[in-house]
Image: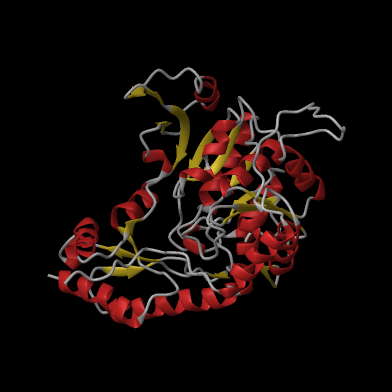
Length: 409
């Protein structure tokens, strides 16, 4: 008998989403923009405490508009986490700039503040600071914002937080609790189908900077100037969110706290069921925040556990259970040509960015720099994301645990 498939993180919808979607149909606003979009942006701002919000077609679109507003362009560098999803960094290339991939720390698995500080100091000595710093909140855990904001503030470099996975996560700074992305120059969120809250596809750009959001809103609507005819003095994009999808987002936001609670319960179940196994570790929760536990992530050390991460993944798949390796670091991706070492000339790397001739299957590769990388590489080699859908039953969780325990040799 074949068991029903257990997916990694499927959508979890309810009646509230359908109610708002019906409202969208009844109002005849089913195209981009409309009252559901306006209400979603308002509710999102109230939940996160970030005053200005812009609902968009994806988190990648939100990142692109933030970098565009900051004037990122050819010849610039942007620092970013290397342990992340490519949508966090591809907008750097959209604008012709070059990424500098910063390694993770072991406390949060996010951008290492010490490496960030050292690289910013080196760039300052060269007289060539990055245009922005983009830390990722990995698997729903906030980066060490307090230190990152302090370090970047010394050099007047703006921070654009990739909080795509971190809705409902919090961090502590200056004796206050803040939602993920708060206090950055801008924050980016994703509502992809597997996120803790979804609109099937979509994203949000949030900022305390009213002008940034106003400019991004203008760009997201094809940069149409205020004339009765279509007139354009800037190139824009079709990045708007549908009124129908915004209705789904409103319903998802209304139950977000319940979803976070369930994600954390799932983590606790896995932890209590597997913590006794040698060679199994869990992604830590950093002391400066509260993770939403979007995905429960384990590390498998083969010499202690008996088999490696990939063997466990295949065993789960054989039982119709989806799991996934930790993000492959950006500096290891075949699309990038990385220059390692302290003697790498950043100017030469940037200038060569559009001229690289290395190709894979006829595809051009892109230039980057790397700071560290060994921590992220180790997390990728040993890390496995376990099914963490909020509608999982105890029977589902037992199935996953049973397979992993059977693999212990």
